[in-house]
Length: 357
Ligand SMILES: Nc1ncnc2c1ncn2[C@@H]1O[C@H](COP(=O)(O)OP(=O)(O)OP(=O)(O)O)[C@@H](O)[C@H]1O
Ligand SMILES: [Mg+2]
Image 1 (cartoon, helix red, strand yellow):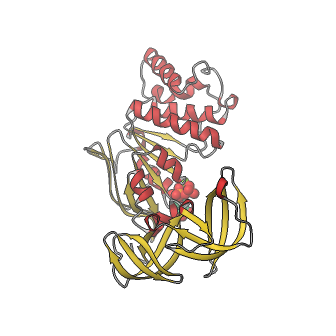
Image 2 (cartoon, rainbow, N blue to C red):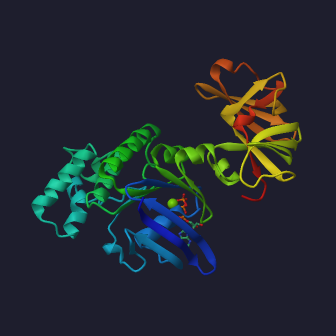
């Protein structure tokens, strides 16, 4: 497949000597949807602003559709931008907000009208053309933000946390709508979020960023089920359970001598005999039992928190770590202060070498 967007070895700094993005590479195929996922301050917005041309590169190249973009002025880059805070023109009505980019491009009036009405319809807001942004809900304003970005048929659509100002229900509805529209229009898209579920629901590919560097790129399934580093694992919902030394290797698994005895876990890249590893698992993969099983930790329940169809137990273990354990409501008969075992199936555990990747 043709790589439509390529970031080759790009570095950016705002202040001398302090890299905000450090020598990273990223490719997106034409028509695909890639999410940049990472915590606050890791460089997501900076990456988008660099692609759009607001920030100069220290080194590296940006290539879009085989054209080097480094010195292309902002207004010559055919890029659509959608921001968290909508950034609509408050004094222009819906029609004129959407038409703005087309007017700048000096497109004939009739054609502008046709394109604008079509895109307003595709975001479900026909009939709202004469309203001002202040007369729209947050979700409607963001739909107009998206319509305004796509109406110019950009080569690239860059979206910076576009749903984070919306309530939970609307966010899920809008996710589906963004995906439907992106697939229909086949626009190559980079979507920034710190919400792992949003990235998983929307993307063809996810790139996880850690302090200005890409830690892992993969499909949502790869990122969710096969994180390659401890950082990625923790970011997508695994928690550390024990650390120890690898004492045996068995095909895809390792046996680890840890505080509670031998733990078995799936191995990743650099894990080998005698190496020090951390084992992680997801809270939904734990069970609670009076009996000891494989991969078992003794603990005491310090909190029981009702969460709808599941109960979250906080269990303090021997090493004074607190493990979060999620149990379906029907099975959640345990009470605070009870002493029991946290058990976890080795299939649900992954071992990462400590300190390395
Ligand atoms: N104009 C600027 N001048 C100096 N430093 C900046 C500037 N803009 C951002 N930074 C710094 O660069 C780093 C990356 O910022 P960026 O806005 O790209 O993060 P982000 O991943 O988008 O975070 P968030 O999820 O909070 O939006 C941060 O440490 C930030 O403080
Ligand atoms: Mg940001």
